[in-house]
Length: 568
Image (cartoon, rainbow, N blue to C red):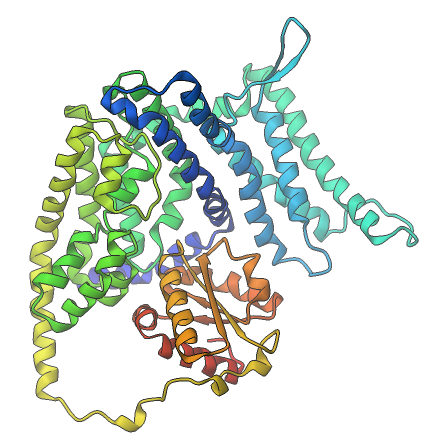
């Protein structure tokens, strides 16, 4: 098994390049911006439809009002995705342009939305002569088309700004007016490109591009929802995480459109009284609450096994420290603390347990006709609860929630026992060689005078930003730093967010800490930090988790980095 892991490690650079691909990142980062809309609108959907489970219906006026919020948000999701994904890509492309010739992000967003409407939205005129837009493809069904528009539009702007393709105005024209004219050329090129394409495409196919994409890819969507397709999707997520690369950042962009359209199709079938028709498995809920129960690798049960069944003191401590975060889907403390990633002992259960979970879920849906996910819920919802709520409190979901835990215990147990015995042997060997610790090497706790305020932007406080994949562990570390600052009365403030949501925050920061799960993004972040006058610190797995538990160690690292003036 060790030789297999070594071969996998050799492939890391290739997979890191995939994870760092700017188009995959743009989809991921664009959807981070949309998550509040997706989740909050789903709250209204839950309120509107959950009472139907107990055969109660809201009065029509109340039902229409509740569904209105969902329809006016999720109902235009593709239009908004064209905007947010194009913004994320434009932010990335701006790192390759001079500071004096930056792509106007708002202009890109507006252009992308207009372009999307041109190729994805049909118009019709009623008998009274009023013009109407068809809304069929501006919801979840048009997402793939929205991505295509969001990839092309920023590149049109990039080429125009890079090669200074613009309308030349006299020097006497004010700068703000000249800048407005500078945006006209790329807007005209992009919109005329999509307008012309839309006219030709409709003439040839008789439909718009968004609808055509759905028709052509329908067999692929069906195949992805089968046993083999599910194994590939969720096995790949676990595999990439196992080799130290944030798996969902590679896989999710390819399936996000399927996720959202499947949930919408499931909900429509369920509301029509056809629970058996709500059979589409691929969904965000399947990822969060079934395949990756407790986080990628289905780590909920192994964390509690470490915490309460382990004889190893180290594993017991790691398990108990990680227990609360893993309940809410934050599993980096156990991934890096045990560790599980790149640990030959856990290679098989880490990859196979998510596949076993999702196959079991599919059996319940196909054989017992339990509805699949009909709601989108926050990824931090505790796994079993998310499964039950997301499937509309289906009776079989309670049974499945218990069965998943039992199956996961069976999958992990023999590997847990082997690793626990290995760690116990290591601890016994260390105990025999135990020496008195060198107390002179222990650094004193940082004080106000230790923080080099002269090297901060405002000269009054040190502002630190922590970035991770979803804002989970970065939030834990930022909270620990702020707690330390309050206790010691230190001029320190820390903020946290998911990578991709940081572009506006970074401007006011003195230093950025990058979590190890986002290590593939360090080169781009370094460029952004340099442009904004911030320093960057990268961390290793165990170091990062240790700092979330000991904020003083993190602050010592920050102070050392600022004093040296070097990026680690």
